Length: 124
Image (cartoon, rainbow, N blue to C red; front, side):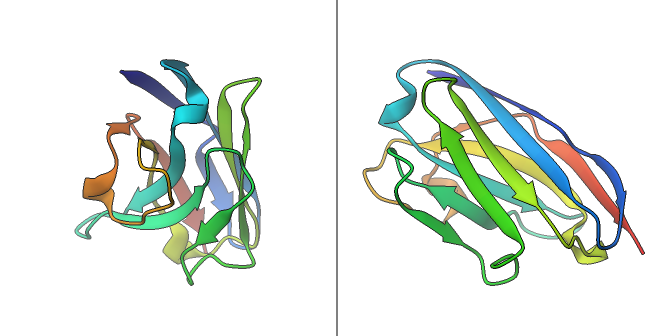
């Protein structure tokens, strides 16, 4: 069992930046691929970014590539999402998730543990 708690969301103007953090507790953090997903009102939950167990490999959705950066600190048991050049279409509830698979996956149903989500709102 892994418990995940997101922080750092809020309201920002278009073009601005936010940094989301996810604190993990429970079983060994390095046993998990970590991902960020988001869900806008009336839409399906979608993949944003993921990072391998060691942090050596990252993968991004095309919609955020070049603007968002995922990182993890295995000593501090946290994963972060730096979001730059934010757009109104980035508005959503953002979720941190953990996957026991060895390799990065992008489908929400494949992830085993989820945080409660945090709101990010980008105004135009």
